[in-house]
Length: 112
Length: 115
Image 1 (cartoon, each protein chain N blue to C red):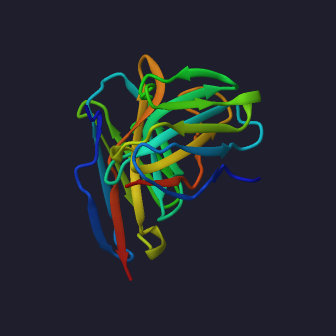
Image 2 (spheres, each protein chain N blue to C red; image 1 turned 135 degrees about the horizontal axis):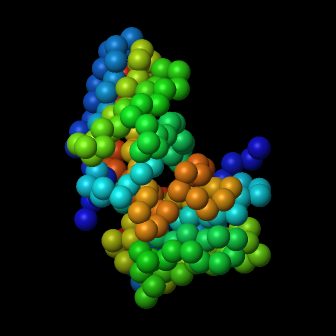
């Protein structure tokens, strides 16, 4: 049972434009969400997080938006750069345990 | 600060053979995680340690998988015997403490191919 879903396996954007990566979850007990970035042959690296008490968190070019009623979060990258090309995973935790549930990832390609 | 170290980086074995993976977490990190990432999927937690005690192993196939973290530092994950469906990247991660908001730092992973 996939509790965290990323329905777009891939996304291509032009350099300088906005990249929007989406993530949906089904468990209403989730209260903490993260985005990880993964380059080939490397482990995922933490990018940005958001708690359910907020609806937006910003860090430089990266902003995460949380819509609790829709059980949806999104990651905005503005402006997109070729170095942002990677696989992005969203993850969620909360409820009875502390484990993170990961989505299947979205492969972002930023075209120079 | 050194990151999470894992070895080997790649391993190819035949089904029914045994294999072991090693992880050295970031110094001082109390919590250690082993994840399995099958191609096209997100990482799935197999086992979580807090120091040298198991916190969560509910998704570990205990008939063939085992893990230990002696002395609360390094950890090994073993598969015996391996099956074709065990082909995956095995990721180790560590965090400073065991709270849901604590950042997990991942190692580069071990890519296992079972033939």
